[in-house]
Length: 404
Length: 128
Image (cartoon, rainbow over all chains, first blue to last red; front, top):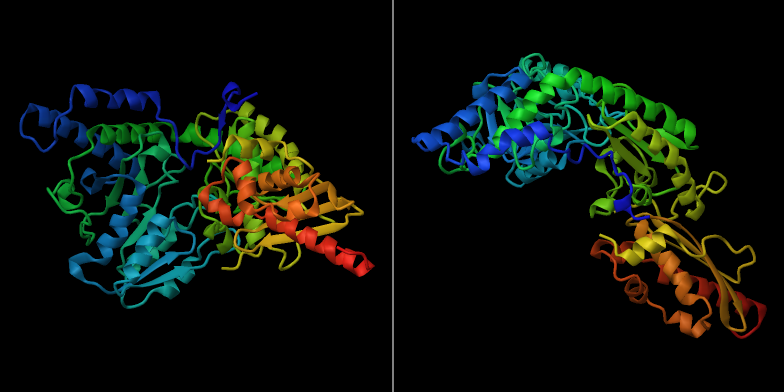
């Protein structure tokens, strides 16, 4: 039986989500009917402008922000780039110190690495074995020339939720802007930029049932930030380029729905997550949960299995119609295991044997039951192929030490 | 990203297992990616009569392991020595570029197993 004949199950919602019909419906008029340029003064422009400002309110409402504090971008990566580079390079000051963590998405860590080429210095804070950043470490890392602190709200791989409020408070006591990458958090937890002491927050529509190619950066009033894309001066000069009106409308609608449905979708996903976290280690010998069991995103379950490699697991699940992902970078085109799992202190072979299951609002208990039913057999099939076992574990220097 | 042939061998790998009284064993590992492959051969009258493998690694690593057992079984030692990494990849309809180096260990494992067989033969005083 081919995968196309199977009922497919999608457990990879941290990669992307389905656009909800309501969102698609809201976007539709902005392709064929209301296709104006929002900068135009005529009626075509005005209807596009009105739609953008409505979406800005919807996003602001989701975050407990002021609409004037919402800047539309092309997605989470651009929002992170704008926050990190835009603050660091404010008024052309090409030096200073940034604090971030070893478990950030590359959209934060790569801009930081880029800034180092121009003389900036970056501290990457370590995390605990469950992936937590210690606010005390943040405080101790602060220097006189620290210009930005960036700590993600929740991790994209293992779902660990960071103590953002405490870190934001420390940043504010020292007068340092605080950025958080909330790309995975929206729609999965309550987000309030005021209560959480946030100055800059990145989000991406397609992670919460909006379209791809659109995101936003919350920029608290008074935050000193420079645009990284220059041009016609849209988005109050912070992000030039003709606005992606259908995308912005879709983001607005997705934000409205995320807020409206937050409580019941979170409760539903949390139930399913907890069921997996409880049962997978019971059903599969030598299976472990990565990250903290409760202080994690309601939709994230992350496991590792001794003696097997994660990509095989993903391919076997795919053959059963189940889409999940792995902590092993082997399947994502890079051969190094995940920097997040290594930061937890896992060995390379442990990091290679990982499985990430990320739920969405549309997943059902029946789907989780199917996963729980097929997973033990898949793991034992792969273990039969593996030279390693409880009786014969991998020894040091047997290949999987992955030293660069 | 994988060819149908790779997926077919991954889904139904041939000749998985160990040979307890193997005449040659090849154990290779790639420290870059973490793949480990153990290959066992049984040789009679200079012909590989049985071959089995165990592999820790990604889909490509398992598929190449399975493929080499098919390519080597029934071959003479001299013929088997000529099987190259690219023969394995070609027979599988190609491998993704990123996997060509890392997960294409099977030909190396076969060479190691033959080397082990020849060393054992030499130790017994027979011509290899």
